[in-house]
Length: 85
Image (cartoon, rainbow, N blue to C red; front, top):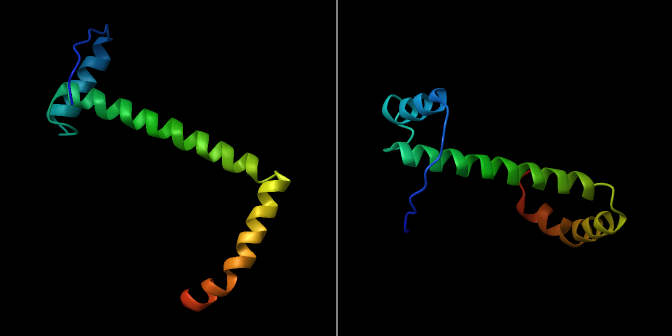
């Protein structure tokens, strides 16, 4: 994957943390890689929070509940055949 050079102004504390995460804890082999890991983790957390919010909202949606009930009824016997008791 091609890399793009960027310049950011970060606090001394953040720079120390990135350096420590790379060198002391081995989170990633380089400081740039630590930043990539952190951004990917933040994006993952935000995506999971959004998915949780959508599932929470679906709990009150009549169409979703009806479809879930239909699926449960359609596959109940298959579950009973394959899931241990």
